Amino acid sequence: MSTTSRLCEIIAQGGKVSTDFEGGDDGFSALARHGYLRKAGVLASVVCNECDAPHSAPIVYEADGYGYYCPDLGFLSLDAARLAAFLPDIPKLIERLSEALGCRRRKSSSVYGKTWRIGAAQIDAATVMLYFHPTLATEDDTRELHHALAREARSEWRLVVTAQGALPMVGLATVRLDDLAEIDVTTGALSVIADPGVLAGVPRKNLGGRPSAHGDLLRLLIAGRIRDASAVDSINAEAREVRDAFAAKYSDRPIPSDSAIKRYIREARGGS
Figure 1 (tube, rainbow, N blue to C red):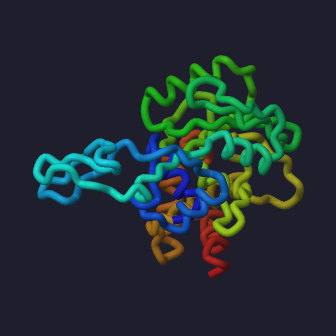
Figure 2 (spheres, helix red, strand yellow):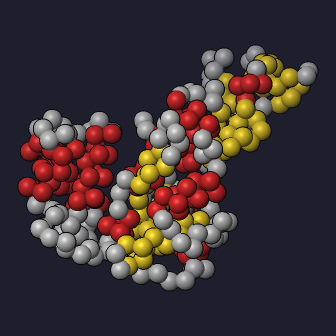
Figure 3 (cartoon, helix red, strand yellow):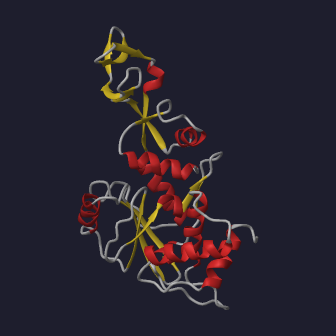
């Protein structure tokens, strides 16, 4: 799992996480080290795996130490170091996304609720206004996002970055954070890996030749299938899978030709 995908997973949980209970992998450590996670006291609860029926239990402070109560085993103490909690530092993430995208008009506080304005990115002659909302997996998520955007000046091209979910919304394009950007595990630098203009549907100038109008979208789909280990070895079979995935996700756009899909598959596999 990439460092950015790890951050998506943590954001989607919507609560505190800890190094110990979340595995303490390199991605988690890098996110904490480079400021994408901030310390937030201790965990509120843990899962008890000591008895026959695993259950959630609130953390309590008793007898000069932390622990929890199990109905079968009574009070079980915990090492305080295991309970150090972290939360995603969303303002820091918004700041770094805005800088990487060269945005203007970033808002340093949320627009409304959990919706943040990343800022305006200039794409050729058009401006794409980018926002961030942690998850777009439920109707409550989309309702809150719409309430937030109603407070903003109307933009022709808008792209919403999220950590989980992609419920369709009229007049809005969405993209998962790990499909838009990547975080270097060593330096913590955030870099953009997809064109926000293409993702938002901005018509592009033809600078010569006939490159696929959906190149970035195809790259995202193909890279996602490789990352999820769902890609198949056969180029022809994989092209059919990518074609079906494209048609399902971008039903309002013309489906790329088979030759274009295969070209991007070969590109993703290093020209094989």
